[in-house]
Image (cartoon, rainbow, N blue to C red; front, side, top):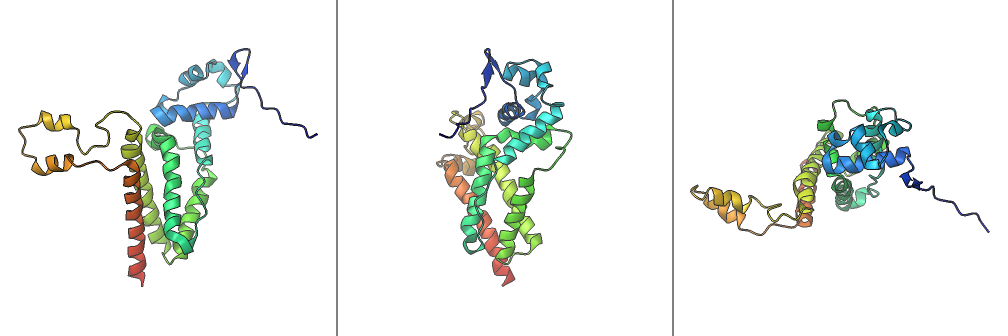
Amino acid sequence: MPATSRRRPTTRKGRPVLTREAIAAKALEMAGTQGFRSVTMRALAAELNVTVRALYNYVEDRQDVVDLALGLMLDSWNPPPLDPTAWEESVAGYARSLRKLYRRWPRALLVSLDEDAPPTSVHPNRLLNLDRFLQLLHGIGIGFPTALEVHRHLSLLMLSFALVVDRPATHAATDRGTLVPDVWLAAHADLDLPALRQAAALPIPTADTQFDQLVSVVIAQIRSHLDAST
């Protein structure tokens, strides 16, 4: 009978058993909801119910923690296979993989704003996945300069979508995702805003509908480049 692997206990005598993986997971959880500025060694130790001194038995410093958290986030970014013969679905699948990543840890995306020093190393997935996307577009006849332009456009759209649409959609406030909250218009009832008031009264598309619209914009951009090249 084959031996079964034993899972390492997560606690010992009521206290958590620290690992670099556990520290990274907690730091990423904190950064995902509050941003990386919330990830101090003291706050992280408190979240893990350990002492700050205990953390230093596993990590060198705070930058090491940030690097571990970012590595964990990018480890989970695994787009589906990209096929030039089905490029529209491949672009949509790539966008969905970004949405899944960003939606899970939205505030962690602002690491470049929160951190003065960049990560000490570049995660392989940042290079491999970009290379695969560029290969996809090159395979259907898009030159590399234009392919990079498309990727930059998609990345910016996904970043803003995650922060402006997906993240607010997870909150219960009724004015989340509206063009302008009703209280804003009520507070300025004296202003002549006929177009804005009429637009604000329209139903708000769901986050999924807005995501599909975003993907359609990127696919239309790619089509326009293909048409121009022919």
